[in-house]
Amino acid sequence: MPILQQCLTWLRDFDHLADSRSTPLNRRQPAAVFLVAIAFLVTLMSFSRYQVAALLPLAIYPALLWGFSPLSLARLASFLLLVEPIIICLGILHPWLDTRPVTVAGFVFAQGWLVFLSLLVRGTLATSSVLLLTTTLGLDGLWRGLRQLRVPAWLVLQMALTYRYILVLLEETERILTAYRLRSGRRTGVRLGDWGSLAGGLFLRTYDRAGRVHQAMLLRGFATHNPSPVPPGTWVAQDYLYVLLWFAFFALVRTHDLPSWLGQSLERIFPW
Amino acid sequence: MHMADALISPAVGGVFWAATAGLAAHSARKIRDNPEQPDIPLMGVMGAFVFAAQMINFSIPGTGSSGHLGGGLLLAILLGPWRGFLTLASVLLIQCLFFADGGLLAWGCNVFNLGFYTCFLAYPLLYLPIRGAQPTRRRLVIASLVAAVVGLQLGAFSVVLETLFSGVTSLSLGAFILLMQPIHLAIGVVEGLATAALVCYVWRVRPEILAPASGQSGTGAGSAILSRRSVLLSLAVLALLVGGFLSWFASPSPDGLEWALEKTAPAEAEVTPEPDIRSTLAVWQEKTAILPDYGFPADPEEPASLEAEEAEAWPAVNAGTSLAGVVGSALTLLLAGLVGLVVSRWHRLASG
Image 1 (cartoon, helix red, strand yellow):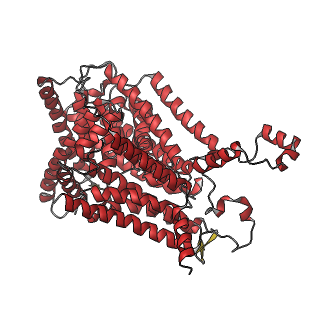
Image 2: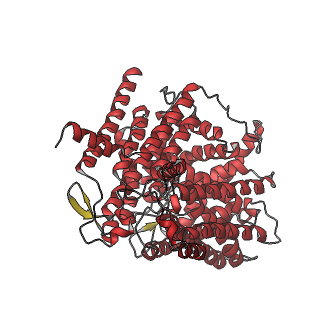
Image 3: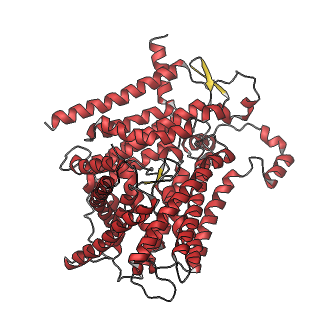
């Protein structure tokens, strides 16, 4: 499927995904959910590039988010497939560049493989956690969370407008491209000579539309430099508990190699 | 050129988040001086336009490949540098949150790489002087091309530095530069051509929309042109960032004072202190520090970081990862998966 149609399908689906959902996570203040997500990313990225096993307990966080998220595993995997190639391209060079040998479970291989694996694990966990955060919170939760984190109201409003207009303009772009394709025989892509007028035409319509939108907003009492604030929301004990528990877990993972401890404990119980 | 979270460390991500937030606040203050312009709706819709225009790929003659618009320079040309920068920042945040394109922790880096160089350096220092007071089609094409190429080259170089400072890759500076710069030279030419095609079209059809040339009146939103002071301020921010980071690459050898102290007091190094509260705290600090000694925490699984081990004969290096570690890792992943599955099932059952 062309990327434009993929984007359109995803945006249309997204609007329905997180609407009117009531999960324990949706009942938390969005700022609390955001704070934990940022702490997760900071913890994940603070490990050294040679660590793979110690990162794995952090997978519990995106796994839990997925449990509450309406995003299917297949859809999540399709997003990861878009992102992973970039990480693979950069990471795959390491086994040849960093050839010092390491021994893991009796096997000797180049240390660069550790870097490659570590990059893959980080990429997968980070990308999935951000996507799951977005789908779990939904649009309303996302904007509220940003406001609660003191992101300026005008920036949040601008983002909300941009998001809304992306869908409208993508649909318009799809119509323009379909019309162009139908008139250009078997040619794929747009000729550079035509590109300027195609994108330029879209721009001029967009520009005029922005003016009309602004006029309509002013008529409805919108003040450009003082957009109405989002209700701040009140934190309850569960919100504090949610943040504290996750922070404690991240600190534990950061300071202790849990998989090694688990393996050694098992070895003591069931010697192999 | 969107950086993923996997490529940066919290320290680098944090520094660039702070730099981007500072630039955004400064840009917002600049825009406030111009209250008659339809800022938010125009910026919102233009952000969406850049997103949509990036979907219109054009074929590159003779190569069989295609290219698309970048956005940073175009936004600076159409909206002015301040609005352009803020619009790009929100587009990048949307791309990160909804499309997994670029990371959340890496958002500051991405805005800096794609927005700072194009809006605050390439646009005022290259595009505007080349375009001149009396723009012609030829001047517009050359200005767009040069500014896009230079802006993207600086952005690509910034990616190299940020990745290397983050310490997530073993690539050397030279190898990484050779990987990044040539490909972004080609991409820069393509982006420059796309920007030029669009700018020329708008200039021909609705010239009043483009930033007015000096002395002309214009209603376009691009009229906020950077002052010399602002350009200098931008360069100062850049110098501060680069200078701050380059200090991390300082020689691992002791500096003059440290060398002198080592030479004059060798006996002190051999004294083993009694374990006390300070040493206990130091152990904890080492465990929890994100960048201890401007590097990553010493890792038992990191043989390469230990200089002494480099001297050992092959294959004496051992990562210290036993079979127990591998089994533990597999179990941890299994547990994480199970947690997700159980919560998902429970939640679906509970919600009917």
